Image (cartoon, rainbow, N blue to C red; front, side):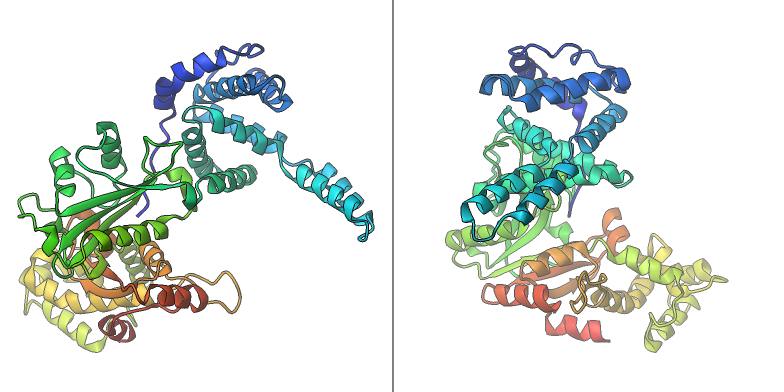
Length: 491
């Protein structure tokens, strides 16, 4: 569901350069920051430290503070990846919490008489102050700049990538995550319906950020915004030109079983007033830098509320979702060997196909190879060969149900159940959905075959069960399922 989008720093520099340059020109003392070597060698790194210290000095008023932040932002955007990594390391290492001051202040706090309430409060206030790292105060200053929050969101996207191999950056990344989490509280977000009349620049971003089913053209986008479709996005008031997360909805009759029918440009549009089902067929996180800051559950709940008021005949709310982790999980299990994966009847059916009783091409493809099941699903054209597809349907559907319901990550706390492996399943189960139905070859695209052997799943949101399902999954690790899914997962 998530799609990492390159921060595009050079593009940001071109877009924001003029605005930030005008702001930066209002402050003196920024010598050299507009002509840095993109690699940020030590000589230029010293200039960055001077600029950082100037920001922390808080000399002058609000205009001067914005100008200094704009100067630093322009300097950061002018660097290449190597230079930006060095900039971030300086910020992470040299502008972190002063641990000596923390220890000294903690010692003072411990010495205060608990009955001396005024002195105790003052000591606790000093403790809070010294725990705030200078880098956090620096980052906060970008909030006052035009598109400054977007700048920090993109900075965190790069920080997350760099921190995987550089532990020194992880504290800075956590600081920035916590800062953004406070700014992107759900109370500050606005749910907007996106239509064909929305600004073209915003629609272009929808095309760019769509992470589940690629939008092929403007005609494709227009079809997804037709009168029997809805597209809703969360937007932040300080980032009005950017979607944060968006959901695409189809108003249909009955549960959708494959995405190809939903995305068929030639399919006739349904009168939405006659629809009884809302299908959430794509949910895309648009900002890589907001990963881990969850507002997807609020998106679904608010969209359901809007739809229920607009279309009283709609009484079923479901997804048609990908299963991105199934095929990678299955491939790992197959690499360990097939014993235990297949039931005897399934193995017998597959053996008949391999022997050529049902498909001579399959026999040729797998003759002399170990593990017919593994060999068969490795063939890219198996969905089009009916005997092979029929033989694979049983085991693949059963194993997919097992993967969705039973396969877990290790629990974070002893005595707690681990979460399910599949990230999309975890998202919907956390939001109170239940696993309703598996759809055989619901997505036969190359992406769908690589992710889940073509299968898709309906997660059902029953309004009177959402809270109960959410509590059961979060508290006890219980996965709400339909009877059919539960039977498959137990087989």
